[in-house]
Length: 431
Image (tube, rainbow, N blue to C red; front, side, top):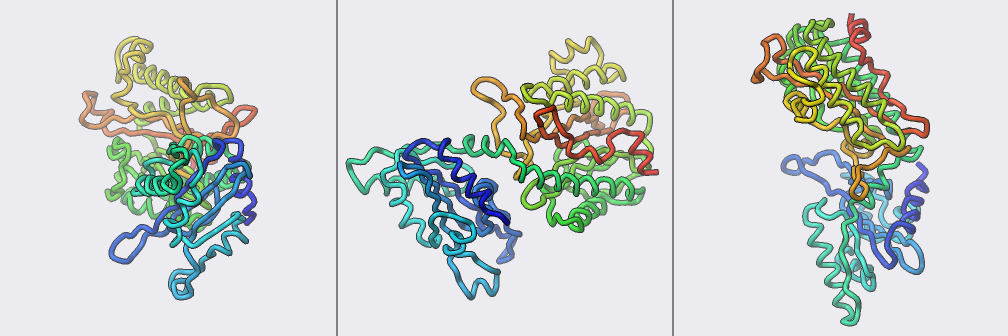
């Protein structure tokens, strides 16, 4: 692994951080599932983005002063006994020699050394409110730093969430390659599921198939809890129980993507358990697919990030009128928000180290414009629960289709187009 990628990211902060400031980025801590059994460790995304370092209870301080950028990291100390039980630790020496930090210390020295590092700075920046207990730690450190010299200027505490998030928003070639791989692995899993599903399967069985397909292709973990929703369960947007049996007449909505080398994919497909869409299912599906394709066409440099949302709403509203689920003028119905009973969520989100990735959606008072290197999901849907006042033939139909779209200089690239979304291609694949 070439860790100069991360060193360069830290050095590039010289032009983004205020003069005479310190950026603090805390790493993740070990989380326990029960008693002394921990969840698999997953590093904080901001910390990883600036370091590539995956040991818990670490802290990064990036100092920007008259001498330039200086990176300091606190890491778990070398410990022969703990390394026998839990594995290798880089220690401070490894953090400098292998991960290219300028200085490194044992994390047992954080509380005694941080006030000295912050002393004389005018601003301390960090992601406020993101790690429990860390806000108070920063207050304590800055208070101690200020008390070292009664004539020092007060140290202002600033939120660095947007600063870091908007850096992460534009993916470099290394990141795009990893996300493309995550998308490819996830696409293959969706194809395998379409080929394998049959009446009598359970949602849990299909979930297991996805996890297996991810793992055998090199992605040990899903990027998020998969949604495997048969029939009306698809009308619950974040359904994750995944414990019901599948009926032959059901549509199956699966929202699942893997995490590959820390980067996420996020794909949703909806397909018939029987391998054949019913007439009503197909009509709803085709509206969602039309909205999907129209929205993807809007993902291009210079367009507002809200344009795909607006287009998808208009397409879905018009389609609902066409099949009789809404009555009236489509334009007026769109303005009144009548579609929201059937399509109540946003069209997508940023994708990267986190499945709902960092980065703002506003620039000042306006919505952000798409720029090359951004990756967004596009995921329209229609959800018709049995509690809705519609003809029974429509009830229990939930459809969402989702692809991952990279903004390029020439338009966009659909990173997940390998998975069929055309209903006739899906039926052919499943036959």
